[in-house]
Image (cartoon, rainbow, N blue to C red; front, side):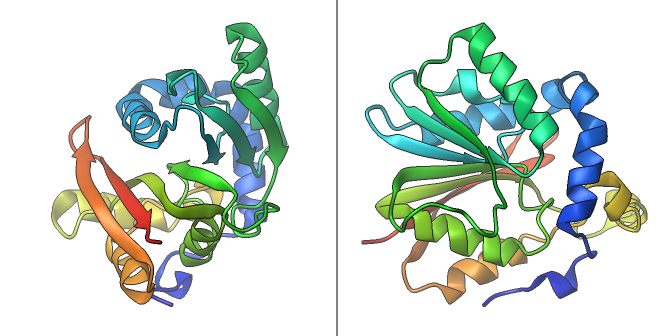
Amino acid sequence: MGSRPEALAPIENAHVEAAYARWAPVYDFTFELVMRQGRRAAAAAASRPGGTVLDVGVGTGLELPMFDKATRLVGVDLSEPMLRRAATRIRRDKLGNVHGLAVMDAMRLAFPDAYFDAAVAPYVLTVVPDPAATLDELMRVVKPGGEIVLVNHVGAEGGPVAAVEAWLGRRSASLGWRPQFPWGIIADWIAAQGNARLLERRTIAPLGLFTLARILRAA
């Protein structure tokens, strides 16, 4: 089903859990600014006033205050230390529209089919061992007519940036994510589906480092 993770640097959930346990205390300080515009764009695209949205890879909850307050939110993440910080943010910011947080594997979501009006996965596909399996799960839990909203780094095809990504890619396990991630992983997955349609693809500031994609689950 599309490009499989064998084409990517290998990474395991254990690598991700260990890496994000280390990142949790400094995550907001390190990544908040560079990823802010992507999170804002994802929250704006995924907000469903009156509906329920799944936030996969919610982490410390940086994007939770950015959603429309009439959108009910459920957040999941593999890292319990990150979720503890998200829970603190929810209490501090009085985010009553967040209806739950849970430790969960994005490749094995414990929700019924067609349960959410939309699903958002900011900066997730470069982290999971199998991006296609994750997309399968997002599609499964979203209602027909709903959307999957992704924000992700897409690797450079050449030049000095690609060289730096290749160097970093050899350290994917210790980083907890893959710096090299071709758009073809997503494009091949969409092409293999009978009920998926790309609604939007655009680059996000700063410097076009990240790409927003909106995928419709057709009725």
